[in-house]
Amino acid sequence: MLTACAGGGEEGGGEETGSTGGGGSSSEPLIIGSLLPQTGSLAYLGPPEIAGVDLAIKEINEAGGVLGNDVEVVHADSSDADNAEVATQSVTDLLSQEVQVIVGAASSSVTLNVVDDITGSDVVQISPANTATSLSGYSDFYFRTAPSDLIQGRALANAIINDGHSNVAFLVFNDDYGVTLRDVAKGELEEAGVTVTYGNPGEEFDPASDDVIPSAVTAALSTSPDAVVVIAFDQTKLLIPALSSAGFDTSKLYLVDGNLADYSADFEPGTLEGAKGTQPGANASEEFRERLLEVNPDLKDYNYAGESYDAVVLAALAAVKGGGTDGPTIQANLHAVSGADGGTECETFADCVELIESGEDIDYVAVSGVGAFNEDNDPSSAWVGIYQFDAENKNAWISQEFGEL
Image 1 (cartoon, helix red, strand yellow):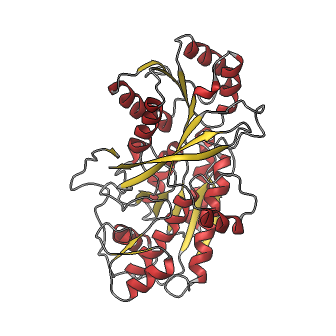
Image 2 (cartoon, helix red, strand yellow; image 1 turned 120 degrees about the horizontal axis):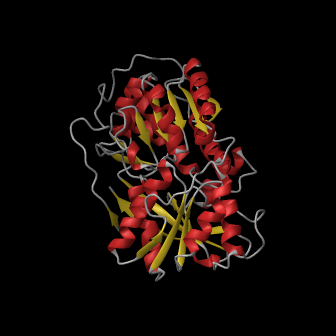
């Protein structure tokens, strides 16, 4: 079991701005805005995340909607940190359409660029994929259904240690997500006696410049690592061929959630065979994947689909419990419906609403496997999946680790 301590005092993110269980005044339809990557270096994450949002809204509306109205959705592009103006304009557009909840962004760096605009408008932001530790407890109105890097970093380190590696290099881009995940994994590795030969602080590469990748690969391999961790987004498609061309055994590569994708169309067969990666979230069940395929039959990856689904369901349940669809009412009730106060477990929106209407406290069982929100508005626990690539450069789940904050 992975464990960690999460600090927090009376000024933590869980401090409520309203009373749970009632007091909401808005009877307007719940409008969900999605701020997810349709373009940029994380565009491959967009389809499963958007499918998770759409599936949740479809099932909520089939169950009668929220407070008598169908839930509405407005999709907007977050792009990536190199195209920051896209997310800024998207947030302006979403707020002008009076959304009460925004699901996104996927990138921690993008969120840090827009979170003040969102939460400062008393709109709830729930990211399904942000993992940077700097976002823990950032705002009373900021939540996430993905665990912080404290959990994934430990799982990544454990996978490397369990495989017997003793000298590890990191190829990490200079980004809030990359640096924080590297720092956690590096600390865990060094505590176990593993030497981090390259990719220490000050040895990150510029994510906006492809020209630096050959020199970064040369510098990393000059330290003779027996394993290499690649923490990057779309730059991964340049890093892996460079590593392979330099003679590195790519079965000793470790990827992370930002680049754990299907590379069957990108690399020669066998390029990634044996390589591993980590992805927060419980392994999606076949039944959940089939439901996702009903809203998007073209899905190839399922990264963060469960977390996106959970974000919408939790927001809708908070509105039902509070009796209003306005942002402050949803914010004030999110902890309660996530199970932070205990309650009866329920797995579907319809079942949870039935319990709420009968006066019971609920504990929504997230499809992503995350625990209730803690005082920093982070999941209090989560699973991290370990995946391995086959000869076709596709990854498949092989095991998972549980972590708590």
